[in-house]
View 1 (cartoon, rainbow, N blue to C red):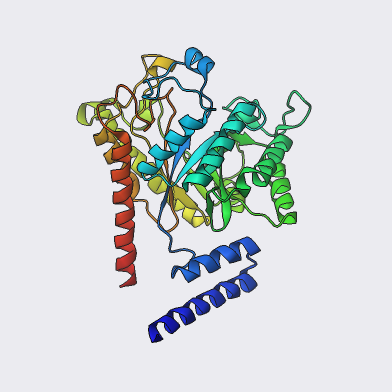
View 2 (view 1 turned 180 degrees about the vertical axis):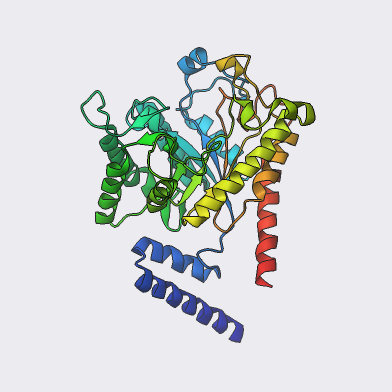
Length: 400
């Protein structure tokens, strides 16, 4: 009886602490509820284990399979994404792999079928206890070149790219993000902004977006896709501002930085000719990626953000972009080595991204294929389990 009373009293104390944080730090009501829930479970808002998301694409249909080369053949066949049975199987596979949520590519108003597929994933996720989030595919959604996304440019309907971006994100927060299955962190929906590094003239749009969110008493947990080779000092590739100005801008609007994919066909970025004789290309890539993540993590931390690392089981887009391109064969050994690399970048609240669940054109998928010599669902589960076990051990050691 005394033990039970003590647990109740402790829970009340922790909830009162959460209320104190609300009063002193201006948390929203949503954040307060989230903090109180965590407190009752006996954990602080920061003491949360890592999450793992897998990038998911809902653009597949007969035309897509016929017009765009795929590296491998899905075990489910050339499926149609807008199919409840397919999505049901994908969610089961993702859960079996230990993935916490599917990070779904969304192209705004450009292709309504993708939105319909997300709606199906939302419905099935709510039924199956899965989570999902959105990666805003900026260049496609704004009908822009991926190399330079100018928010001041006009779209065919006369709206600027910046205004369309604001409209799309507000639509997202008012629809998908309302789902109980939508992945949140710190009480706010997680939204990835693809190719953030190639934005220009974006400041007014972000100011407008956050002003509107404030009026609605809503929040977002934006993740900037900026992590790439040799950009850690100046993360916005086309921005003329100083390094400090660029990082300060990111810190104002984003909670974390990530890199969708560290692959580059320019192997000089991670391996010189002498390296190839001394080190296999995959080892050079992994060592150089670890160094890049070190640099990005340092800069992100200095500006109040986290690094969310990404991994892939392999990369091979030669059928799509030419057989002269370097590639990394999908293998459990390469995959495990990549996980070992990113595991060094582990902090409370870190999200890890798997590129990808089903990007069949670049050969990064963990979804089972006809050609698989191993089970990448099983390999993924093993690596995620190891990641979370390591975190638990570190958290336990820190308490002692």
